[in-house]
Image (cartoon, rainbow, N blue to C red; front, side, top):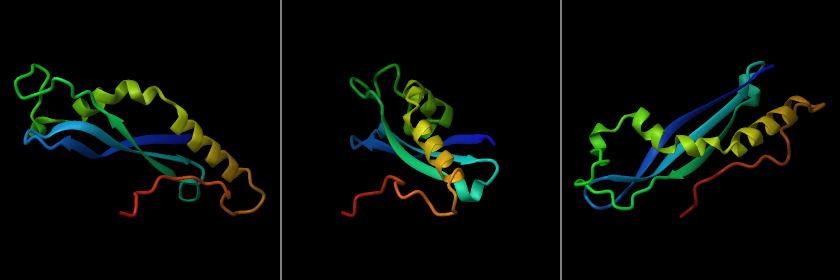
Length: 117
């Protein structure tokens, strides 16, 4: 039994200045137990803020939107990945699911949803 975790960047939120300065990075976290990925897969979405103070096309650290790579964007938020709460929540959910006596889902499952408006 091994729990596998992965992340993927699903969206970039930009400041509406005409320069597409990234202000938030949307990341999907996916976890599953390798003994039964179909039954145990859980996903969460989280947003990570990027420092935008004093960033402009004239600043040294500015990278045009079209030149961004996944590696660059991940580098901006790599320190924020040290928060292990998502991983711990996913592992707890998977462990409880695998240790249930029946095949029903845990009743306390929590996940993120977009607002309806």
